[in-house]
Length: 178
Image (tube, rainbow, N blue to C red; front, side):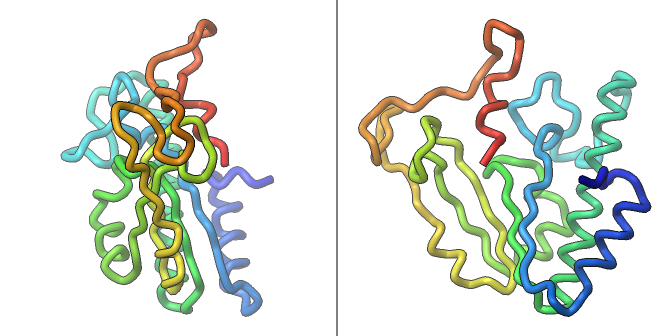
């Protein structure tokens, strides 16, 4: 595995994806600092690259996340220029969708919203996929129409992704995996 916050690994990846055999790329940029569920918040709509006066640990987390956000945009640019299929997944409320570069690329592709419960999870989790050079991604759109916290697919109450468990682990952690 590669630590993509390291410049040598980032450059290696960017070289590899420009090879002729690469036809599609999927990204799931970590949303840990981009989530509106994070407390304390480390960025907001006015400070997309990070709030000022963060604690050193939070600043380091934001700086590392920013490297990956820049890498995401670098990969999008390559895919746009080369006609490579690209998909990017993040929560529907993620701040990644508000970055100016993301808004530019969104106008070049397709944004598809869906709820994870419609694909078999216990939680609703509104999710968005950006698709570039991949119009069939529109078929991913499946929205839960259930009411009062009940899933329209299963008829069972959604698991709520808020707070921490008895071990002080964020309840959202299980929902990060796909």
